[in-house]
View 1 (cartoon, rainbow, N blue to C red):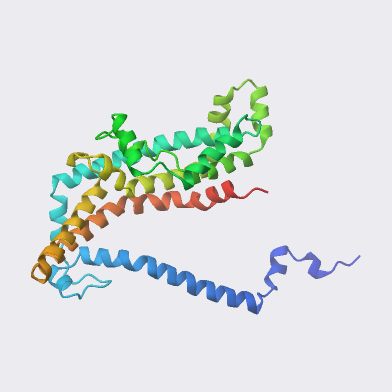
View 2 (view 1 turned 120 degrees about the horizontal axis):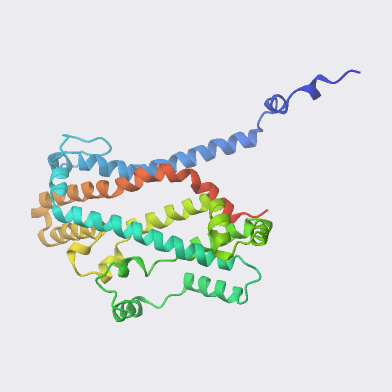
Length: 307
């Protein structure tokens, strides 16, 4: 009995003979051009800041620095890194980010796990309350009065508590928990595990991708946040490094407005210090991101797509 040779070929061999259509090749080309443009637009400002931070002030004042450092100089780095307040604020940023991320992750996980249970009474109301806060808030002044009346002003809690739950992250995590097979939890309950045991020993080990994604979202958000600390903290030694950077930018802007052309050199020198501070502030996120990025797509898709 003869067998057709094409039928005996492995699937990969048969797929190799399929050529992409002309329309698909055009789509790939256009997609590649658009994505390349997005990468260029995204990288150019950062590369320019890095080049300015490593360049001599004379070249920066002359406007001759673009993507490549001119007159390699580390004086600005030495000035910033010799400032004790910079390192104090940097330490505060690390502390605030770690503490706020842990609190936000615990609260988001617990809230999302509860909302993922269809048998929960009042589930619709709880989801509605969460979604309502995405579009409406109490306002700046009521929030300030609330934080002050609770005695949280000028404390670490004023920075880490007000934004402890992101509703977007909550809904992504809720959708992920809903995608897990209910039979797993039922089997665990038959074996004698209570609710918290099921969450800690069954659900969370299966949720590493979405947890890593939430850690990335929250950590980047808290690391870059400055307005909350600027609003609720008055003591300079409690500021995060983002407020330190904001004060540098405000100082340079004020000098430019007051001095005009006469203070152009001072303004450019302040801009160099800003570039150095931005680079030093961004480095930790750039160092951590590659290790978490591989969980990013899978975590979001698992929490957003249900088959």
